[in-house]
Image (tube, rainbow, N blue to C red; front, side, top):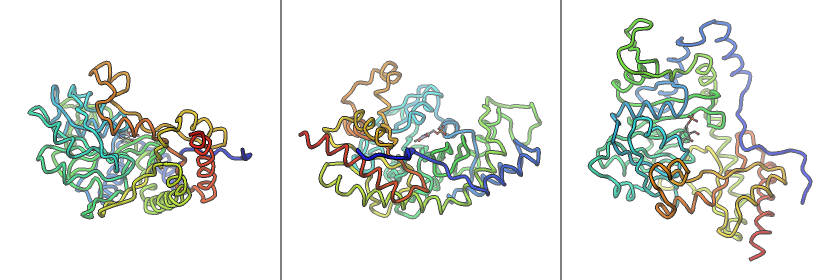
Length: 379
Ligand SMILES: Cc1ncc(COP(=O)(O)O)c(C=O)c1O
């Protein structure tokens, strides 16, 4: 085993003097919340996506919750969604006492399979919630054909573009973004809903702020709301991050390209699965670099062996329907969504962040190839 001097982390935000200056200005202004930085961030974000409206909120999860309420999801409704996602996309449906109805995923894109989703539609289906997983655009035109309300989970997909040239999040459906520290841009914690409907914008703005409509006085509330606000400090940070989005996306795409080249042999010789390349005009907004281990590789042992070689990695993502809470509440069992379950059992996220160098990628690729050679040579 080669000695290493540096542990390569999974993710690393890019924060520079511009972000420091932007945050400092807000701190000095004394206007830390409900101030001018919120609409400024929203307008810049909406313009970048090509959405009519945007509402900044405290997290991607809060964005999903308010978006589902805006399209009318309520108690007893069914919402069709992907079991291969971060748990928040299904949890948000439960917040409204509706039922997440899972359908299997497409083995290439790992997104909700439109045919499987269509087969799951019933008279109680109120909305579809496709997830643009790992930044790869979900097949929105196929979902739009049903004429049902759609909420898009675009929390991982800032910068992704559909084949028809629309940005992911810019088609008019409420679409949610997340700004946790590993995302394409970060505000530490934070989120955004993009949407085409002015009514949705009014409702979401009221509900993120305890149910207070814009024309009402402080402590005057006409409906149930939440505290899902995003502070001016966070919005200033978000605007500064948005200014460098193109460079961040280009760097992520560069790192992904380096991985593709460095792992090509492991893919050809060892059966390592790599993220699908862009096809049919869809463009991924790179978020994570997730590989599928060969069927005979022990994932836990692989992750441990990578750690011993100074490389962080993690299983990503587990199947939601097989999490204990979902099993117990809904009686889900292994075998229901075989594509998702196979992918979830094999997937590993490798270190991936914009300033990652070619030699860091090479080190990860060498370590992984070495670890896999031990597993697969034993065949
Ligand atoms: C697909 C997906 N949906 C929702 C979320 C929730 O976002 P947040 O962590 O900002 O609440 C995330 C964040 O990791 C995500 O990856």
